[in-house]
Image (cartoon, rainbow, N blue to C red; front, side, top):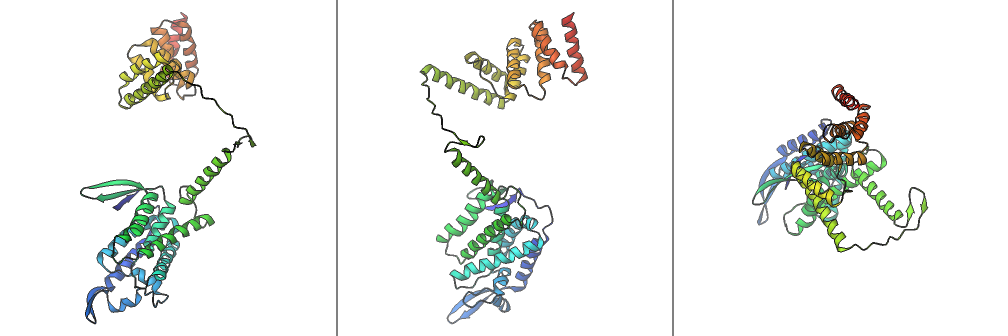
Length: 394
């Protein structure tokens, strides 16, 4: 599974990340030289030139500079391509957030901590930027946990999927690749260096956000944890009967459930079915069928109210179908429940015309036309409204 696109784009050019990628590639080109070395009766494949081997991290006899230098050495073409790809993919946005100097220091710090994590548990030499890249990836999941990552997958067939960065990095890159996979893969991969890098990246950035050294966006992992904690605290408080609005603890009211007859249960089930069908047909742009189901719903219970847009669409459809009385009732229901609709004068005008031209009820027609004229701003509609009122008065 290879991440190929992210919804986060850096606002500034990530020069520091580009510089790190160029430095890694340059050092790889001058240090990589795969050759065979005879050790007694064994022949060993060595990836580096002789002068570069002293810059690998040797946990049994480490030098301080090796905790940084090892991160710029790579043992194969696939090794450096993989590391630089992930550094480019996740590092650009982290560079934008931390700034150039801060990002360089963070990358080097990730290399040091990843090297320490490997040295504490292993004695074999290690090389590669994987631990530092893991730190950058850990920083990304803290800073942009809700970003969307598009992943290319292949397993008998090829396709793409989208994941939240939080789940993809935590479950795939950390848990699967570095905790589960080592149990099945005997390859010489520094998994503990990766885990130490992830730990450093996540912990360091959370600390930077908590201290204000890095400004929070409101969408980072620390903000998510704070919101979760507030919701948890609120649930704990109100579960004991505390009313946060009055500041008092109120005694919970026990509500006795009223037993419903089989007829009532059947009617409720039918109402839910009809409302669901109305929604389905409206989503299919089949307003004619939806309006007929609406009339069936009103025949069962005329107190049922549909969502605002659904009700208005059905009222318009009923008028288009020349079902004027039913359309007027739907518009009336709309006015009574959605009186704060921003174009309420349009609905009042429609009702006035219905009662005036088609239902021959001058009383409600005058009422709605007057209310509409007071709010109409379109000159053509206002003139039509005034003409209808004049005709009714004459």
